[in-house]
Length: 131
Ligand SMILES: [Zn+2]
Image 1 (cartoon, rainbow, N blue to C red):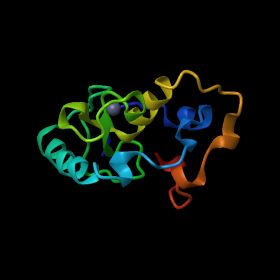
Image 2 (spheres, rainbow, N blue to C red; image 1 turned 135 degrees about the horizontal axis):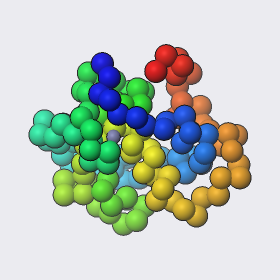
Image 3 (cartoon, rainbow, N blue to C red; image 1 turned 90 degrees about the vertical axis):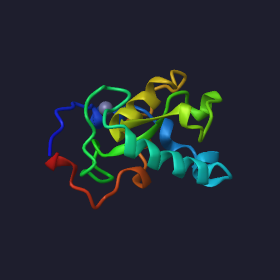
């Protein structure tokens, strides 16, 4: 099952609050959704390696596993990257995508620590200690 990747998922979850904003991105809820989903399928079908860490992605892993496949925006939507154009999308591990997101929001201070972790983003049904 292991793909040999090492992702600092726990650290990231405790460190930042950049995911705490409302899910209002156009690729998730708006008109870009259909194109995003279409391109997501193309990427899943054509790419096998995480675009962030360069290690293989195991498509047998499912959300919310930290190494499960996800689609990363090469230029974040929050930085005016295209939300659904395939040229701005790449395959990534969920945890790598998360880690990258934190790095790209340097204005976020880490003073809030763990209290900003949202239950919505950390499913309680998953036993994280088994990873
Ligand atoms: Zn990765």
